[in-house]
Image (cartoon, rainbow, N blue to C red; front, side):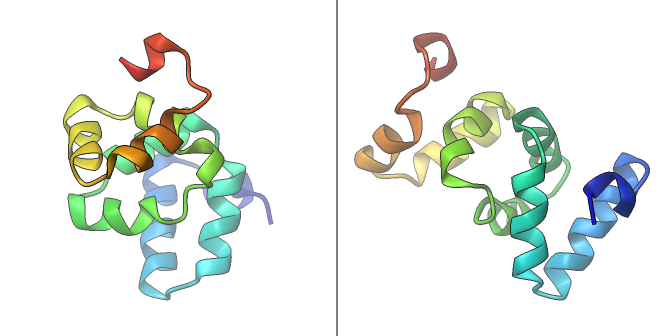
Length: 102
């Protein structure tokens, strides 16, 4: 089932994500985050409190982490970078252009 069939607006999407988290439906969470684009993932993360964001972060495909990090709010980005090692940051930003890293 595609994400547009699961919900028709942002509020429904957020409720659906919360339901998947509550049910610990890791397969559905992985599928959903694989279907969303970078900007949608960033806006979704910004819509949740920090604890929930941290849970959702685990389901973002590794290949998208750097771009999502570049798109989220500066405060959220700083929180994530603060918790990463230098090698983690290097891996995440690999492949991003200089403007996205800044």
